[in-house]
Amino acid sequence: MLRFSFFILLILQFQITHADLYWQPIKKQSGHSHHGRGAKSFSLADLDKQTPLSTLLIHSDLERSELDASSGTLQLKPTGKSNYHALFAIQNSDEIERSAIRYIYFNGKPVKTSPQDILNLNKASLQIVPAPLPREHWKYESRKSYRFIISMDGTPVADQPILASTAFGSDQILHSDEFGVVELTIPEDFPEIIPESRATPPGELRLFTSIEVDGKRYETSLSAPYRVSPRNWKNASLGFLFIGFGGLAGFLLIGKIPAHQRRKKA
Amino acid sequence: MNSIMNLTVLRRAVQLFMFILLVYGSVVVGFYAADKISGALPSLSCAYDQMNADYCALIPLQHQFHHRLGAAVDSGNWFTLLMPVLTTMATFFIMFIILNKAFCGWVCPLGFFQEVMQLIGQKLGLRKVDSLSHDAVDKVRPVKWLMLGGLVFGLPALTSLGFLSDEWGDPFCQICPSRILTTLLSADTDQIFVDTSTPSYMFLSILGDFLFGLTLALAMTLRQPFCRICPMLALHAVFRKLGLARLVKKGTSRCDKCGLCAEACPMDIRELQSEFNDVEKTRDITLPDCTLCGRCVEFCPDKDVLQLRYLNIPVFSADPKYFKKRKKAQKHWDEIKLINLDAGKKVRT
Image (cartoon, rainbow over all chains, first blue to last red; front, side, top):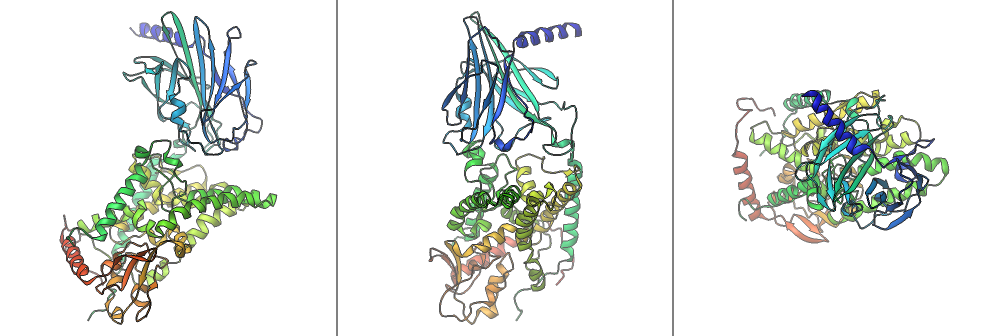
């Protein structure tokens, strides 16, 4: 029975990873992120050079810029607009549609649209949609759970297998529920953890899924950085203990505060 | 006046509404819109709460001094520091001018929470300290200025200039009870911790946890313990003359003997009783510690001696009839106790 389950897992993994187009960041020498203000470089992994490629940056206000990623790499300059942008690549033929998406935060002038408007766009037939994206100043973190919706032509897909993998080698296969929702707990798989906020370089999370409809194959990926969980150096039990000490000190202090009659008694 | 319809009940209703909006507001305004509404509210609505609908001005101010001052000094380009600070302050003013210090008494989620804790303490029959002594009040009053000058501006500035390590960039947020409170109320325990990464972070996180526990316990007996040392109260005090809402007084000779206003004041402002007595003109008595809660006006027995004014138009005035009914309602409310934990203990005076 165990051998049979392992065999099924192998088949599933093969089905959804044998061609995995995805965006990955190109690390800078300085490694400084400029709080979303600097240029960012990305490469497309597993690009099929035979199939036509279309690459887009969908701005936070939904304006679209055509990009050239035929070499497999590109550099994104800030658009001057704040909030999430979508970096999107698609390769389409009669047999297969391959897409890759990555949501990137830029700082700049506020826009009237919401990140939800970008998420709602039907960018590819098959999509993995974050539900929701982390808000400003927040990132995906290891040990925490996040939700994603799998949709085909805008309709949620139930019981769809998803491969969640990380650049550090973790893999897990999840299935969407009846509403197309997948809940993923990002693993704690950093090879080295430096116990300080932002000191450990971020990991790379990649989600893949594929489906076959009417003889055509659809594949999509979503990639995003994730940070090491601060729970590695933040002790919650000690926190509760010191709150308890504070409460105890407060109750002891209460008994010692003399009541003061502000009004002069007649 | 109906016994349950009074200014305090109205204020609590507004506080409850604002509390829900500020702690769980993303449910109302949308997840992404929530942190974009202003980014600088004049109350302790915490940016660490991912469900909130705004956050307080103190976090951007600390970050601007932490990240921009050193660079401005190095480059000589002060514009890079002034622009973001002025933008934050402009956002602060837009809302502050409308309500003035009433943000503390009517909007702040931490202020409301302390009032709720006080009600719980009272209903549990815990000993109630109505007022602190003059000496204690005088010792506590400067602390809010130290909190504002030291924790919001001073330490972040010293960090930016390289005199302190990076951990001291936002020290007020590290110890603010609202950070723990508002996140805890949205079922997030991530802000309760002792940070073991560096000695400075460990010290600040222990202090933050301890202060939260202390505030919880003290608020059950003493009115508004954290408000008295809050840097937001000090920031409001600096600009209080710009707000449209005011507390005004035209005292009589009876004020010296009465003192009901000072007794009603949750911030122990004794000057409410002693200042502006026997004056010919109405005078502004929106003092630095005032939160414009209006309790002093409610409990003033003399007609129009104390007033809450908006754009200099009286919106709520002291009135003998209101006072009698309010006093009766308060007495009735105080008599309701679920249990009496303090029964049998000798009252210290």
